[in-house]
Length: 475
Ligand code: CTP
Picture (cartoon, protein in one colour):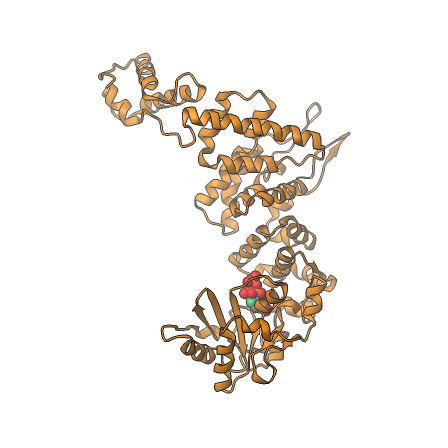
């Protein structure tokens, strides 16, 4: 099979080919770029392998691409990278040792192309296209990666134990590629994972979470989580999620399996949003259900307070998974804490007060919250689902109405602490907080509007009740 025509479309290939020829080196395009070219997935990262010295080749290529272009050299890794137009070109000398970008092992560069292909992770990532004059564009595919691409299969080129012990992260990469591409994992390769799950412990948390996030951002993330669960990796990297698995039955009363429910919610969210953090909120929304589970003869299974406890669990989980401890985490926490609120609203009559409180607490994240709540309806009873969705639509209408009137989404009290202190000529104290809270509550309860005209006399009345004297006129 020849890819000459495809290579014509990007002049970089000719440049690499001629630079390599001039220095008497063989060169090839290899790895993910070749895979994605065949799958017709656009890719701007191109990996080149040459049979001698990748850094020398990168230097020669950079010179030909333009005088301002300089390669970034990673001496320890024996690689060099060129940022060119919107592409990232990476050069490496063929290796006998395992190919892993993050490997701390010394780089042995005296391999042939075949040695190099042997030490790559999967057959579909080990294909190369020649840039050498005599067979320019020819596909070099020793492990029949092409067949695996066609039959949608992830398979290691060597015995799985060898490929996975070279770099245990590859076990996660197998599941990540399967999820991203909707591929199967070859049975031997999958057993190789199951047999080696302990080895994931030597891989850094950052690399693990990086792969996990790629699984989460795939079109149907549940597929990846089911594979992670089946092989045992999930238990090792994210045990809290495994705790959601299973159904307990007492008498005739069973609760739903919260693991599969969570995965359904995650898939639902994935159809409406690509936001990684909303997807994390879906993963974590019921995370405290195992910890709050109780059985009661009358009510059956309950999970009281799982939303608050879940929100409290979020920082610990984020810390362990090396996810950011910043506003993204607070967003996830907020959604976990509030995820029952909209559904509680539709079960009852939708009052303005309840809407006001929700707008106040959710602020600008209210749309994301509504997406999560709609995704949380996983009942198999279509009529019931439709009824809930209709009710949600009513809640949303009402939200627009209330927000238009009261502007609570980014609630800024019309009267702040400073103003209260000036009005009563009092220093900062607990009573200031009390008055502020009373004003806020009155606004949220709809007793007064969120305007100065209504809030001022209300504040004065509250202060006077507390024995304070107003020292200020309204204006
Ligand atoms: N590779 C490997 N083992 C690893 C990491 C990478 O064998 N643990 C090889 C594979 O041949 C892979 C290539 O290095 O195709 C490039 O790695 P990377 O950029 O991480 O992956 P891609 O295949 O390009 O895919 P993606 O960009 O989606 O990560």
